[in-house]
Length: 104
Image (cartoon, rainbow, N blue to C red; front, side, top):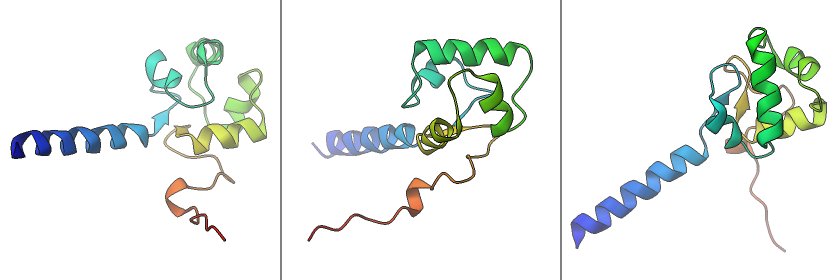
């Protein structure tokens, strides 16, 4: 019984870690990109096609080269865990630092 409980807790911890994982647009495969909230198969394909031409230098380069990704969508993608060269988009609040919602 205790072993099963420990396994369940370990599995839960592993799944939480995966949910908060950061995905670098220059290193991620198709499955990893698809796992980012806001990226679907079409946008993932567009990213991979552009990446064949060369890595994305920064967020501005990413926004310019991937059709349909502008400032607002880039911020949302960054909030969902997407990174360019290991960096989040400037202006995207970090989830860990976001203030807790209060109810009245």
